[in-house]
Image (cartoon, rainbow, N blue to C red; front, top):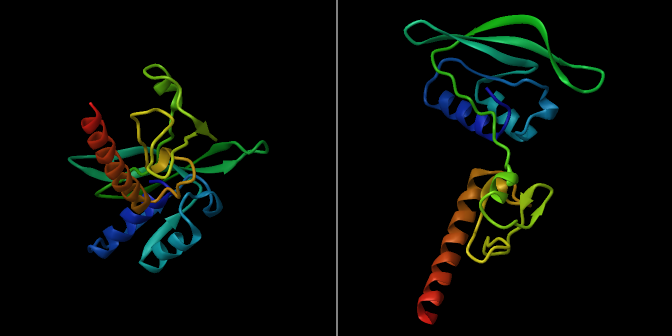
Length: 174
């Protein structure tokens, strides 16, 4: 359940690991998916079925997952997502929820001075250091990142090297 890169990764790998049927269900259309068209095509050529315009309503459980009930969706005239009332069941024995996360900078303001943000994401330098002296960041919450796992891993590596350098300099100076 979801339309981003994580949903595609889970689905493609599940299929490659031997799952007979793998479906991705997304509440909007292919144009609104977080996954690129390349990734969507990769999923389809890997045997994954993409189902658009449906949102989950409930998971049917009887000693384990049996199915997921979905409700078809549509956009209203003011571009809001709305359920149509029409439902369908999709058999399942495993369900992955890959619906994403949103960075909530307001939470940080309660515990630390404000961080420099742009378009709701953290600004960092080349070492992934934020505007705070001892805070580094990476991954999806950083402005300019391409929201890929490999990028987040690289951010972690770059930040770790910078943190190590910072700590060594602090130790030498203090």
